[in-house]
Image 1 (cartoon, rainbow, N blue to C red):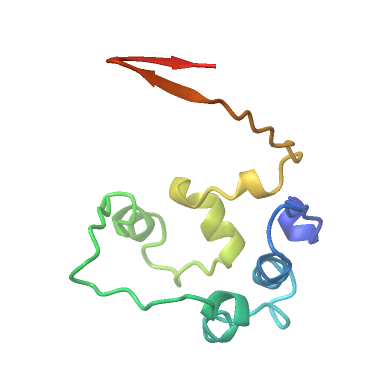
Image 2: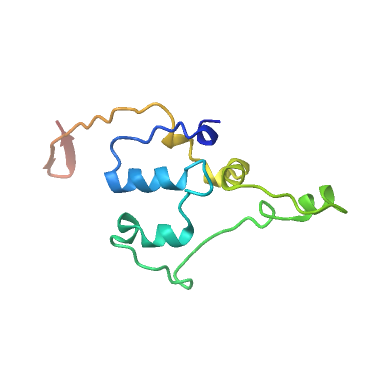
Amino acid sequence: MTIFKGDIRIPKWLSPGAQDLIKRILDPNPEKRITMAGIKEDPWFKKGYVAANAEDEDVYVDNEAFSMHEAEQRNSGSSPAIINAFQLIGMSSCLDLSGFFEKEVSMKFRITKCILISTDTVCA
């Protein structure tokens, strides 16, 4: 529901450009929401972006998950259902964005020093 209201919390550790782009993608107003063309032209998105080569991609797609057979059976004889991006994201388990909206967790780092002694490794 927070996405529908536009009440989202974006992690502060993301760069300002990434934060801005995410806000524009998740804008609840479809008139103001950024388009795919707009995303591709966004300075943060374009930084270091290299278009994917389809031959290099090793993508596994579960065709059953994206099958329209079930939807066709439910909607037979009626017009196709219209859904928005937020509903589509909610329906797909592979597009789980909940990590962006949960309470921010502080990151802690621990630095250790490893010393190699003959074949045994000792970490301090």
